[in-house]
Image (cartoon, rainbow, N blue to C red; front, side, top):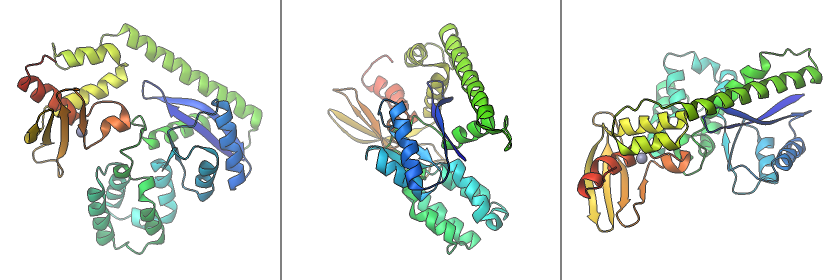
Length: 313
Ligand SMILES: [Zn+2]
């Protein structure tokens, strides 16, 4: 039987197990049953984003059962596994896996993606490879440049699948039955819950060291966030201190700035700050995707707005 785990992310950025199902085959009606059973166990609440392996029957099942607003993405970890089967010869060439991995995980804009995809096709002469051509046609389903406007909590799909696979499959072999699986499943869930409890305790007890003392926005973030969320926030804050910026139209109530890292960034991001509402938005859309302010917005809030408007942050 095919094992189908449902895994999400908790407030510490770690895996949380929602459930696991078994299906006999990969037909659409099997996935219809699987997703409907999952939806029932979740009080009919559809997820916002769901990441899966690349299979037409899964996509059809998602369309049939979940709301049309559910954003379906392909899991990059599965794409990498599939690439070993389909483009093994290309992967053996020097530098290919680095470039292919960058395309799968890190491209920030469609223009950057197109630039590196063309470079890969040209350098490795793979523009006519059937599997890569099919992958390109569905780029909106896996390339990070196209999924920025959808909430995902910053989940990196390959981390979820890899950890789940290791946690469950390493404790079982193919000769063991459902009862053995059930006990392993309970052990894994219990272990993950125990670790979550430990991290909750550390967050409540700990007073994490601040990268910069006496900066109000960091002190405030530390008081609100879990340690993991605070570390991500602080990294964005520190990265923001390295940016250059220019004014890009200062007209009350909206003030716009362009930001970039000298010598590193190909593209400049635009941050718009509204003086009346104090709203801030950035073209990188990191906040929409993860719920945390991006380095560009933090740079504008901390180093520009507080200087211009004499606000203490
Ligand atoms: Zn940004």
